[in-house]
Length: 136
Image (cartoon, rainbow, N blue to C red; front, side, top):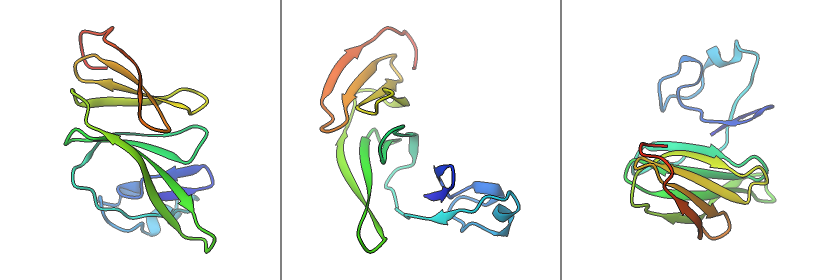
């Protein structure tokens, strides 16, 4: 991940860099500076992701059907480590993610039209509804 004064952004693919390539001089031409915070290999590509509006939480759905919530914690030496809070394998692929404004509930939209509310602390399903006939 990369960070700027406006928050964190994926580093790969920024400013014309190919995915997986380090940030180049071209990034500096935008007058924003990025610093690599964390590099992690994933077993499957991400299909959806969303940062929590109030906490250091990242919700990530992958193409292999996993939905997970992770926290980026800072240690006293200035480094960071990722802590996965929970993960689940929903019945239908996740197509979208969103947050309740206070950051305490994660909302996932699925390919079958289902909308699921997840409690962020433990991933408990708070509510499931299928108001849509198509992917959400």
